[in-house]
Length: 333
Image (cartoon, rainbow, N blue to C red; front, side, top):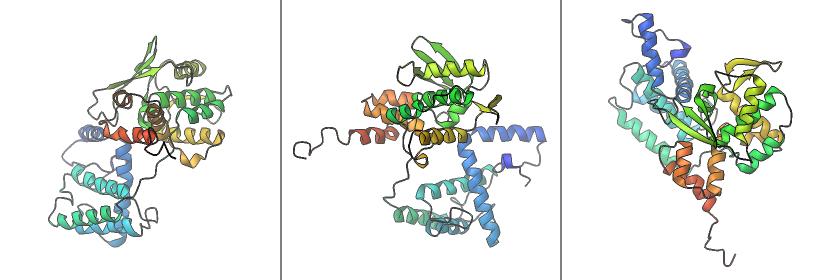
């Protein structure tokens, strides 16, 4: 089954021409978010390597083989992974990648084959063993943190203009990294109160119906001013808003990668005196929700801005901020 790096999880259908196969590949890719597919490809390659070293068949894989793979990840890790036991969330994603690969190849996944009950028991055992485990969280770039980061960017280089716009717009729009790097000039409409940014496709909008985000023209974060200053300095009139720079600081026609967003956040956090290892690209999105919760924002309006599918996914931001409000021990602490 010939495969390329770009279509590592997708079936090759020998009855189709190259052009027809490319169109099939394109729509399979659109079925999942880009970031999810990237993670699945990495997980699938890991599983294939693990199988190769043991003489197992990866496609199709039996429930017993997958159970052995996941059990190793949950205990001692793997020589081809992190070298330490993984979290239940990471193990669950690797199982999802294996299932996805089988379905993409039009094969029955190990979770529904004969003997799948044993695999299900292994997964339940892993979840029970790791019960109470809290996933590691990156620090949110809330209002105070982002203000500190922005204050350190005092230069007038194109990178300074870009990073100011990237940080302020990313936080005030509660954008995911993938959404932020995909913004184009044509997606943005000026409004007397700020900006309206259209998002054609995102993780929470797999069908591509499109979503819009309102960016307030505030005095503290000033995302609109920084956005306009960046476009003017970089002479950008169309195409991607946030672009790569050459080693000499010149603007290219190519959008930055999601990884660049994370690197910018880490670098600017370090410049502001924070530990960069505590921050990631998601810190901007989490920063908006954390600050909104702290300011007592309406939960439904928070959901509207962040485009989460459910209120439950937002509740932890509010719970964290309300933990000390009207505390039962306030009268005698």
